[in-house]
Structures are given as C-alpha cells and as structure tokens.
Length: 382
Image (cartoon, rainbow, N blue to C red; front, side, top):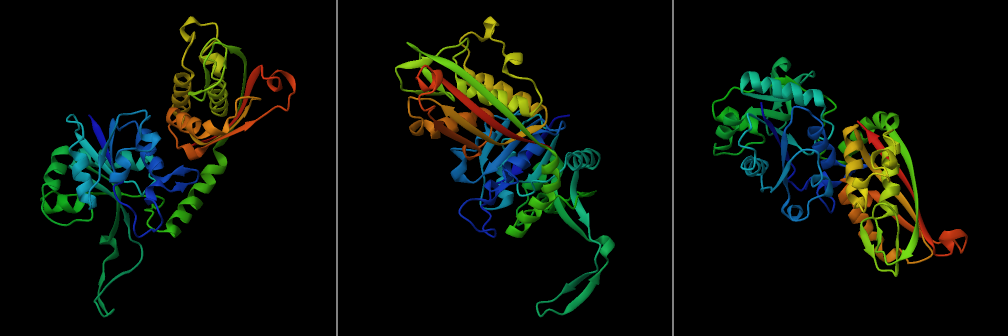
C-alpha cells in the first residue's frame, strides 16, 4: 500500500499577525512547518509528501524541505485551504492508495494518530481525527439567546490528519462549494466519513496563546531529550590548495591540507552532531586511511552524517562555531558559510552561528600556519 501525505501550509496566518507566515515561526527551537513535516517523514507508513506553500516561498523553500529523508514535492498554495489541497493533489504520486492531509499549523501530531487515521481510511474510505466534546454544548442565535442544547455525545471537534482513499479524495475535490476541510467535501460528495479518536495535544496554532501552549507542551519533552555534542578539527595551511570552510571557497593564498578536502568547519560540525547523537565520530564513519574518501567533498560527508543523526531520531536545534584563524578574516564569509551548512544539515541558517577569532600570535594557528575550529551542536530527539 502506497500512502502519500499533503501538508497544507499555503496560508499566511493573518489571524496570528506578524511579518511572516506563522508556519515559519519557531516552536521550541524548530520552525512549526518543519515539526509538522518531520512527523510525517518519521512515520513509517508514509511514502512521500507534497507541501503546499505560499507563493513567495515556492522559489526558495526552507532548506529542510530540500534535504529530507523521503521524496517531497513543493507546490504553490491557493487562496483557500481547499485550493491548496487541490493543487497539491495534482502532484501526489499516481501510485497512492491513501492520501493523508494535515495542517502545518498542527505541529504536535503524533505518529500513533497518523497511523490510526490511515488504518481507519483503509477500512472505511475516509476518516478524520476528532476530539469528543465533554462539556454541555449550546446553540445560540444572533441575539445571543440559546436556541437548543446539543447532545454532547454527538459533538466532535475536527482535527487533522484526515485520510482518504485516493478515489474518495478525488471525488471530494471535484465538489463545487465552500468547505473548511476535505471531510466536508467528502460528505458533500456522498461519502461516509468515519471518526478517529483525536489527541488533545494535537492543537492548532492560530494565536500567540496557542504557540505558548505548544511551547509548554513541548517543555517536558525538550528538557529530557536534548543532546549536546562537541567537535574540533585543525588542519595545516599550505600553498597551492583552495581554502574551503563550510563548503565555501574563501579567497586566500593558502589552503588546508588533509586526506579529504580538509574543510575543518565541516569536520568539526560532523563530529559535533555525531557526538551529540551518540553515533561515533568522523573517523569511524569516514576514516582517513580509506581511499574512498581521498579528496572527498566534506559537505557530502556532513550530509551523510546528518542522515545518520536524523535516522537515529534527532533534529538540530542549533550549531555554534568558532573558527580560529590569524588570516583570512572570516566575517565577510560567515553568512555564506551558514547558508552552505544549513543546506547540508537540513536546517535554517539562523540555527547556525559562525564566529571568527584569532589566536593572538600563539602557536601554529597564531603564526598563520593552521586553522582550528570548535563546534557545539544541540540536538533534540522526538
């Protein structure tokens, strides 16, 4: 069975306010959108993903969507949620038996809820996660007068994910009319939609109060699953070699020498993230006596290390780097290094800090004969 996911992230969160779409805001060290996408990347039942983004993000999508562990297609969202989903559905794999739709604004969705919704759709054709209402529910009129009391055992608050057989969703999206979700369209198309017990933690972030609540809910998780790693590397400078730092070629009359391309920044970051995940070090995975890594591109090694860390269930919160070099000056190249590293790591540049220091003329680094790098990585495990 082939299962595709659609992440609806085409809105701009006007109710939330602010200068950028709410799905790009940071929640406990990670963008809301990244958390939502990661939930589906890490679910074994999901084969591929289509993400609907605002138009301004399609040309330059976030780096974590470009280096994912599963295939991700990116489409431009529409003015309405149903338009975004319809556009995304055109890019869903033709092999898809089930399509799962999820709001990017629900970043705390659990693996269990995704799986249960898929299972229900397999059995019934259409299923949505929903929370049973426990309070007494009143229906009022425009004047604020109670018209009736609704049987609370029949009242549910709809959530996502919502899962459908591909043909059922095709029928639903062909319906002409306004709808707040695809379940409404499926009902209008004549399909029965089954309820799956939702999760109170699976809240939708529509206000700053919701964001604060999500931070609170993640608080216990974050404090018990943070991992810190240190990385260090040093290479000698020699004439006739290009100087590569973090995958960026820095103009200088000397370059670093080593078995690979000797990119000390990439090597230090690689050791830091592997160490934080308890996954060994760069020498274990990419030994310097292996001919396969002779003159290797260190950005490629960093990408491979990032995949190892991701497979172990960890995500980058931030990276802090100190590059110790008497020359050249690092400041003009710091931003390019951040962008290059972020692309390799699948995170955002603002999760990386790059600082340049001299060694005040002390030892080989201070004499301009070498460059040393210290890196600290903070990871979060789900």
